[in-house]
Image (cartoon, rainbow, N blue to C red):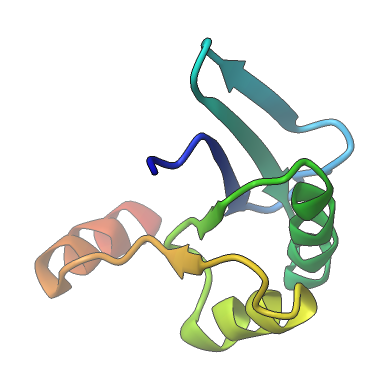
Length: 99
């Protein structure tokens, strides 16, 4: 069975999860997107996504492996939690944007 309910959490300064969120829907797919400012907020959002019956939670590349595990633990590993990963070359390019 294909994924029909998907959650994506991104982390950036100034995000407020109660304000910075949205949903994209079609007849067969629903994606919920939410911005957070911290891992603690991501844990809350992940728990909320479970109440919406998401089948998969994906985190943006700003989350470390440790933070991904913290989110996974917060939901009792009830659905897969994964994070976007970048190649070393892409990480270099991203770092240049931040410098």
